[in-house]
Length: 331
Image (cartoon, rainbow, N blue to C red):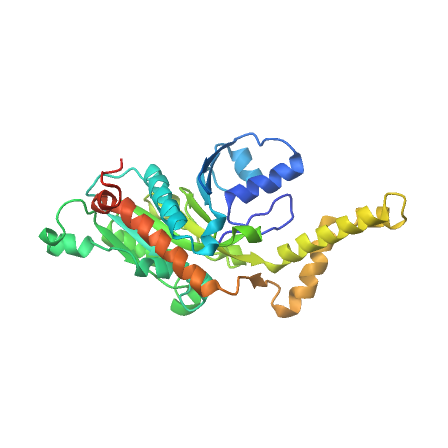
C-alpha cells in the first residue's frame, strides 16, 4: 500500500486515477506529462494513465510509468457475469504490460499479512494460482503444451518474519532467476466507492505497507533487476479521509443554508484545509493516529476478488487456459 501527498494534503491513496482526480480538482486543468485514456466496456470502465515526465511524477506523487484501472461497481453485488468480464479484461491488460516468450518464467508474489483480512489479498491470490515451474522441470509431459513456468510465494510481512519482504524477494529472484515478477497487494483508496470495485495494474513496482504508513523498501525493476508488474485492489480507506469528506459536505450545507450574508460564512471559508485535517488527526491520535476503515463484509469480498485476480493471472500466464476460456489463443 503506497501513500502520496497531493499539494501537502497527505491524503492516502494507491490509485493513480485518484491522484490525477485530486490534482485536477486543485489546478482545474489537464496535467502536463500525464496521458489519460478512458474506455467504457459494459458495466466496467477502463482508465489508462501514463506518467511520462519527472515533473508529472512529482506532482502526481506516482512514479513514471503506466497505470491501468478497471472500475466495476457491480463487483460488490456478487455479479458472476461481471466478474468474468472483469477477469477477462484484467487478463488482456496484464498481457499488454508483459513482454515475455512462452517459456520464460514468472514469479508471483502475494504481499500482505494472511492473519489480517483486509491485508490478506496477496496470500489468498497465491493460494488459487496454478503453479507449474516444478512440474515443467520434473514431469513436463503431465501438462502438455500451453503452460508457462510459474512460481508463487506469500512471504508474509516484517512483523511476522523479521525480514524485509524486499530482501526475501531479492534472494528468491537471485536463486530462481525468473524473467518477470507480478506483485499482488491490497491497496488504500481515497474514495469509499472504490473499495473492492477497482483493480489497478502498474509497471512501476510497489512499496509494501506504505499505504497504511509502514513504508518499506520498494520492489521494482530498479531494486530486483527484472520487470515488476504491481496488481492491487483497494480494501481500506483512511478514517481521516472519510471524516474530511463528511466535514466538507457539512460545511457546504451550512454555508448554503446560512447564505453569503451570514456572519458565519467568512468564518467557515477561512478554515484552512491543513487545520481541518490536523484537528482530525489529533482526535485519532489516541487510537494510534492511523485508523483504517474497511467494509464489514470484508471476508467475502476479499475471497471473491482474490479468485477473480487468480483466474485472470492464470489465464494470462498459461495460453492453454485462455484457449479453454475463449476457444482461441489471445495474443
